[in-house]
Length: 237
Image (cartoon, rainbow, N blue to C red; front, side, top):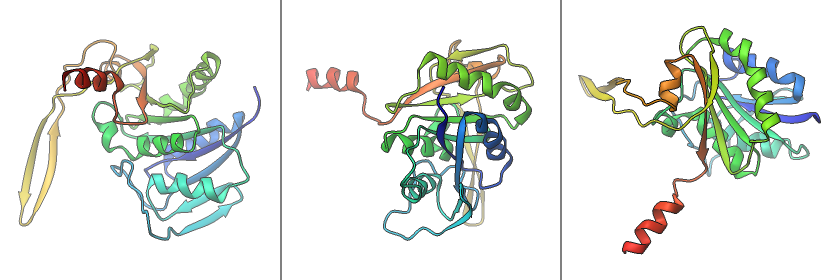
């Protein structure tokens, strides 16, 4: 396999444990260019600072610390390293799972989706705060993705490592939309948003995999548009 040019970003911030680990694990596949937020940017989704100057620091010839969102980090790196043809965008490894509807809020997923905008195959990687399980299993999973030739600039591969300390397998899974209980604590003029997850997931979904020692890989579309739904509704309209 040829050596790759890999753009690595995250939403937990530059120098966080997850991105440092992935930088080490990805080094065997080529040159890793890091462009990560100066501050924690969890929950920023596809947010971007359009119309504003974005400050950055060059920490090395292959490393940028960006005062912006994860999407900003991809934008800045794509333009800063304009002479580099990126083969892959990797976002993570996030400290916390990005499954179900959390994918709508995730800055980790948002950065990976931004990679698709530039025509670059992209993956997002998350763990339930267990980076040892990532260290032990990531390379075999990414090499399987390479071998099966399932990378594409048409979708993001969203990878979640399971809860616990064991990996029994890797599943190409579907997204499960949890029916969680949401509630709020009010204090003075502020609200704290809370939720109790309801784990009623069906087999073969990302949420099910997380509690059954399975790594899940879920393809996520680059658009909210659903062609089959469009065709169905258009025929009725």
